[in-house]
Image (cartoon, rainbow, N blue to C red; front, side, top):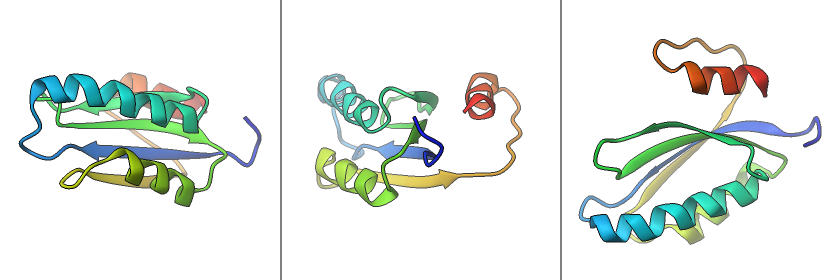
Length: 105
């Protein structure tokens, strides 16, 4: 990854009535698509207990508009996502692994 790469926080929320079997199918597919944007350089930040919402840090040389486009194609009506560029300092309590990822990337 070159020095022009940026760090992003990607949060995905599936629509509220998404079934467990559908999540079991769609989450791995979506994670594969996210991983392709960052050559696997990512770390899960959190996952909600029911699995409908999750967040990952990723480092990618792709512009945020490309990331948005991929997520837009990978989500269906009623799903939502948020992509934020991460810069500067970070502090955490009980989020040691994600914080370590940020510090190392």
